[in-house]
Image (tube, helix red, strand yellow):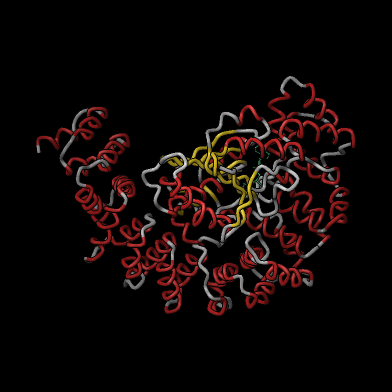
Length: 603
Ligand SMILES: C[S@@+](CC[C@H](N)C(=O)[O-])C[C@H]1O[C@@H](n2cnc3c(N)ncnc32)[C@H](O)[C@@H]1O
């Protein structure tokens, strides 16, 4: 007792020191309710280093179950989350007995990517208190995986109202693939229609097409936008050619007002909707949308999809985009050529003349930012201005195509996880060290995906594993380092089991879990700067996907030669599905794996 008074007495620093040094679990728990956040933080740090994690976890769960003090509860939650597995055991055990605060316990369980939490959460779906049922459904959605999805689906079948809505919403958010026949039943129920349309997107089943196409003309904007996002799933990178062809036919046949709704959605608040609408307009070849698509080119989230949509319309699309009204003014042939040369020389990026409108649109905000009256003035500034180096970096930030998402090109990722990693583990080319480079990593999804695959493959726990993400654009690297993503980054429904490495945050974004972030570092690096590349460490695998396509031939050869140099003997090079080393180099050996064909540096 005398000691307990010790942590409650003195100024903030004295209380912090006391809690950091105490061996009394009661002292730590009491300090979680301290008035000062610094003392509460010290208590959390002490709790997660406690010698008996199980004992501490049980004490922390008691705090959740007993207190109404929000500060103490949040501190206890943070400590539990950092404790990991022992916290799951303690929460599950506490839920076995009747708990007045069981909603908090269920919420806390949802924060763990631990399938052992699923049975306790599934029981929560049948709780007499509807608030507890909803908390259980939300938590199951955050955990995901087959068992959680089966529980949610059964719940959606047998219940109605808020719980059914939460269950379906959770399934849709978790990327669950529910048979279209089941989801179609809910598409006509107004309260759950939006979730049902999202699930039909995950299903990618032709049987859902008539319902989704009809929903483009829905009365409510939310349903229309859900249908737009769902239909985009049928034509995006993860879709098969057959799915794409089927949807293309439907989209070409679209009449008004569905096309108008799609055009209107190019201005939607959510970037995923803008992106999806652009994609569908391109697939449907709706040239009436070109002017609006051209306006979207400067949009960091949907600009790439708009460019692809215009591309999909062929030369006529380019012509229409080039002549669309543009407040940024004209870019003459000479200024375009000067700009293209600056970009080529600095980073190998190649721009053809028919894509000049793309540079014009993406650079218009830069003209405004530096106060240039015309493209002529702006190009002079880039050539001779005192700040030309910094401004050229801003140009690169604005004109690079940064499209990327988690689990992109799943067949190749399976080759990496199931074939390349076991080979490297067996060969141990560099002892217990594994280094993988994501070259041109953009906003980081690829680098984090690689780390997830390494953890998922297993067998590297006591290895020195490092995933290095590099890109030339500092803007995208800031996003990568933050490690928080919107649903757009999760649009591939492949490898759903890896979603356990992401945590849903309160604002609806997805955060990469610490265990994955710890394996990844990000650096700025220009791939055509051969001297800078020399500073990269030796690598076992280089991923360079969807980068070489943007570079001119000479730069491509230079970059691939640096990869060869940085790879260890027997190391692998993985390119994007539309890229190859034909006409670039013959130095690599082609290796045909079960899941993919890859390049390998001969040993
Ligand atoms: C389309 S993203 C590819 C992202 C990821 N690899 C993927 O496949 O999902 C292309 C990235 O390459 C980067 N890039 C282009 N030229 C580069 C260069 N010379 N050096 C480094 N990165 C470059 C761009 O900034 C952009 O983020």
